Every structure is written in C-alpha cells, then in structure tokens.
Length: 116
Image (cartoon, rainbow, N blue to C red):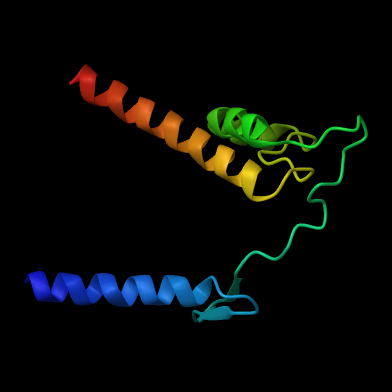
C-alpha cells in the first residue's frame, strides 16, 4: 500500500512540475467541452508603479493574502475589486500573498478545531 501511495505521489509531483514549465499546456476534453490548461505567463506590470506611483511589495502581498477570501466575495458584486495587485514587485509580492493566504487558512482551521 505504501509503495502505491509513493508511486502516486511521484507521478502527481512529476505532472505538476511539468505543467509549470514555460510554454506547457494540457488539454482536457470532455464530451461537452474542451479546456486548455496552461501555466501562468509573465506579468507585464512587474515593478511598474500604479497611477499613484506605488509598487506592491511583500507587506502589501501579505495583507492582500489575508483579506483574499473577503475580496473574492466582494469581487463577485463589484468588477473594480480584484484579489491580486498586478503592479507588484514580483516574487517578493507573491511570497507575501501566499503567506497571507496560508495564515488566514491556518487561523480558520485552528478556530474550527478549537470549536469542536
């Protein structure tokens, strides 16, 4: 059983790493539709200031990650609200955003666990 689990994990990791390579894509076809899955492309707005001259860095990414669940709900009702700031510092902002999402998910999971 452990060997099957290890093999499945190895295959999954290999597919995920291959899917993240540049210019790679996977086509998923069902009887009623076709979907093209690709890795995200480069952000042309990296290190480009917004209208107020600001570039979002790790701190802004952390905050945006923390408020991401609320921002997602609001974005359904207001097209001017977005979860992710495109005028950012690249990997620095991405790290902050990912840490913010991780913090909020971890706190919510802890809260649910303590309520039991």
